[in-house]
Figure 1 (cartoon, rainbow, N blue to C red):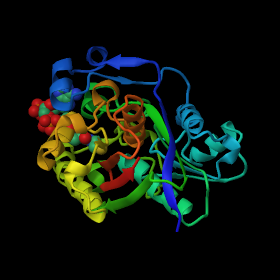
Figure 2 (cartoon, protein in one colour; figure 1 turned 120 degrees about the vertical axis):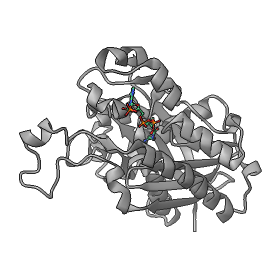
Figure 3 (spheres, rainbow, N blue to C red; figure 1 turned 45 degrees about the horizontal axis):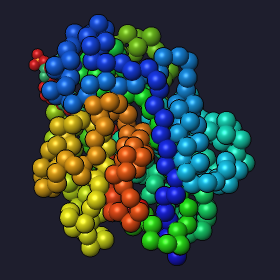
Length: 330
Ligand SMILES: CC(C)(COP(=O)(O)OP(=O)(O)OC[C@H]1O[C@@H](n2cnc3c(N)ncnc32)[C@H](O)[C@@H]1OP(=O)(O)O)[C@@H](O)C(=O)NCCC(=O)NCCS
């Protein structure tokens, strides 16, 4: 069977920076509360009529450049997002159209913060089994237009940001390789972090009353999410290491989903890893859900923190609950 490598990676974030101080004008919050509880100082929020697919195209163009492939070479698009431009179809088909790609397979996956690793896992199977030669895996989100920016929604609104990251997967003839991927879920906790409406359970699926009640906004039990996250992250990281007979010391860089600096610090402590090997950029972008891992991976690479043959571990936890990891030899 073939091996898969990540041959290109790129990211894009909107230019508009929203600081904690600016949020103080919109809701009853404070820079001090946000920094202490989450580590976030600012995030990017789109400021014009721009779609998730537009952010995705900008990130994808960079990934294609690095991989030295053209849009016509891509034979599959996997788009990790909770915030596709429209309710249906998914945004993958918009990327296919906007980038002038052939009539290739293109689909979205909705696995929240774990979705990019889920996408990597799916793409890896396509390349390994020779079903595709150039897979574009995207993680992109516009969360800012979907959160309640009043005091009522402050627990969620301060956390989330917009952005996009993308990777090109190709067959590997050398040492670079996606060594393994690991995906998990536990649906009994779905209501701990969810958006209820629009819902196919009710008819019509969305009403003025539902909107008045705020049921179209994301809802989260922050403490419960935190509690599960700090257990599942180390567990799924160890699963990736054990599968490949690796130890914590073999890992050059951990790229965790950027949920909250306190979660990342807690995971680092539980694993006995210094923060110098635990990549973090949450202070600048907040939680960009499905986009956070490819953005962090692209930045870590650009900053020279990931080099050829390095062992890189990706790990995520989020709504579902879902959680996932990937072990990569770069
Ligand atoms: C959301 C989170 C930062 C809240 O921190 P916390 O220490 O658990 O805080 P609590 O929810 O207990 O709230 C403490 C108080 O702060 C208030 N508060 C909530 N959001 C606030 C905000 N943005 N600004 C100011 N105060 C806020 C609450 O209303 C509460 O007030 P009360 O004590 O008067 O009721 C934390 O639970 C967390 O990070 N959870 C994980 C979230 C996450 O990562 N989600 C995405 C996973 S992919």
